[in-house]
Image 1 (cartoon, rainbow, N blue to C red):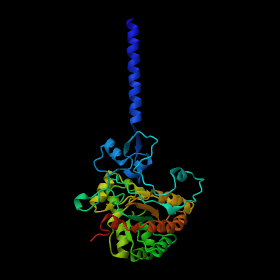
Image 2: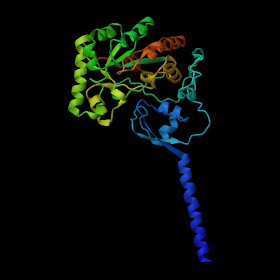
Image 3: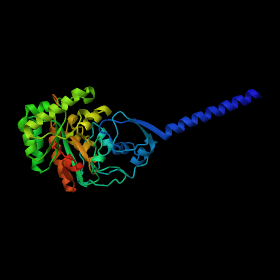
Image 4: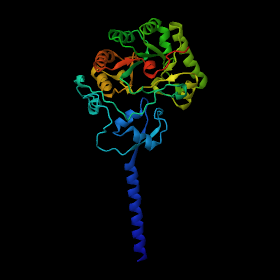
Length: 335
């Protein structure tokens, strides 16, 4: 009799443990933050809300999240979030399929405001953020171009921007600045913002304190020789910046700029791929990542060919394309 009771008690305890584990598993899932992520893009990807992400993870400042940081997610159900942007007919399934035909009609894009996005607009020095991923909720976006200048693709990007009278931000590599001063001068003279993107595109997290300072200073100096100004904005290569790197960059007076829309244009094979990775994800205050130069063997013609469609689509919707410093109300250069 006693053995039977012990067996029953053990069975009940086992069932309680199983249900507890299952409930906990259902209650939350884990996600590791990647470069370029924001709470908005994560919430959209996992069909949840920014409010829930902030609550579950006890996030005190929703503007600061770090690559590699573990994020707990609420249980994922099949309902569609009422707070998501409906910016085009392109679906996530379409974007994921490498064999899809991207014959998408971009004329019916809807600009839907997402009131759940938490953004602190920087207005005073005490409100400085460590990383800027997007701007305030406004009918403006910033086109940004990394890795230039080069003599092949950067001039073509500039030609498109000039045709549509659009201003953008160019994050330049010091090594390439030294080799292409005339292109740097053209970027500046045509009204675009020039920013620091390191000397030779190294992962800044691998540099010691002295090397990081030298890298930034050398790049600034190469730019100053051409435009007589030192950039105040910078973007870490690969978006890689750990806590100590960010701290040093902030102490050096830089505003670190990430992005909220990654076009992945560097690996696109067609114009349609760039469009499908860009237009569906654009939101108010978006900072959009493109490239104006590539690595060996890379072609950025898909970017060049997609830019007119992207610009025309945004202009038709009354969306102004501005420089990052304009979008974020920041100084572009040091006094």
